[in-house]
Image (spheres, rainbow, N blue to C red):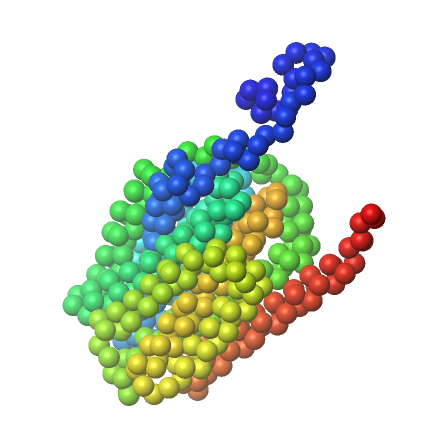
Length: 429
């Protein structure tokens, strides 16, 4: 490092002042700058692989139920186990990324996850399938928190929301392509072949990710000592803003997990009776999520963070209510609104976590991801149970309660911000 970058003088006792670095001296990436496109594409592909693998069985639940002779609630564990494994291991994996580097941990996570993905089609029973999916989710745990921490370190703050939005957009494309591909492949060849195809797709994404992602330039290794990690986690959990963002992420994902776990059952049953290939194609509405996530930065610029969260929550609630209609067109319109609201809310909340945490960013992001995927597991399980007992209206009811929680937490955050602003001392003139 040169003397100017450290603020030290060039000679002992020298009195020559060293100017503060100008904004142009910031070597972090920015849109249009060197490495930004490669980084964006690499993390976009990582997002594709993550969501495609994580939810590879979700659109296939009716076929898994028929093939293995299990109920919708039992089959939903193939989704809940993967998201639960991710939620459980995301914090330990984030600690490893603090010590060994973001790129190293992300690469290892993808390698193990795609390896397990190629074994999933061979599962002989529901129990074995659930275990493999739990292992796969645990392996994927090294990716989401490490990715957002990488972005927070390597991208300038003003571009952070947009950069994370692109990563989340990759999640939406992965979720969409995984479900569409598995839907048509399963209709022709069965659910096992369909899951295998997703495994191959993930291999391609993982190889391209490693080849494209620029070497980190601003990473500083941290400590793996339990006392240090525990102190970092406690500090994050003591931050009221971070706690609210974690809860918001969990509640948004409760809605999304419940809706997309159950929608396949609803559309294959009467009055719709759609074939599996068509049901898989329904997930093309994820493209809406790709757009809403990638434009979340502009949304925050116009409405502020809390305004964007109110809009995302309202859009999601409107979609849930619209999906109650008996018309397929209205159901699809409802899914569009739910998807747009969810991905916008998720991108806003996750980027706010990265900007709020000034130290231990991987742990801060990991806590968010843990809450987020706990919400996914809860949503898929509660949504399936509600559907089994009271039909689609029960699943919608679970979602509306979660949205109400998002709005309530955001209102409390707004009041807390106003109270803090009133307490700030007025500067003397």
